[in-house]
Length: 111
Ligand SMILES: [Zn+2]
Image (cartoon, rainbow, N blue to C red; front, side, top):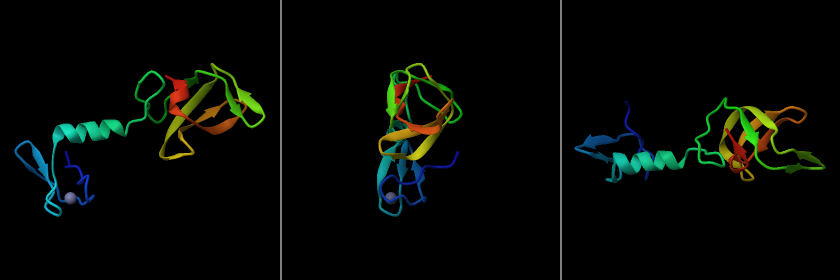
């Protein structure tokens, strides 16, 4: 397993000291636990808190306005992609029949 980059300065010279990770560049120290929590915070979750992964199929849980159209509750978004950086609050992209690939918010879908 490679060691995580420093969360403070992003340098990749981390070494382990007992149960601590230490960055020799800025002398930041952190624990595996805080690293785990930080990585968990980056995960994208659906409306029920389930972690979403690229390639998942999800269901829209409420009607969504899309311009003049409405994506109905229960519509399936297939083969989702997790966006690296959210676009206007939308953090996933999925393909919905009749609409094509559209951006969605993970908070309005479920696995
Ligand atoms: Zn650092």
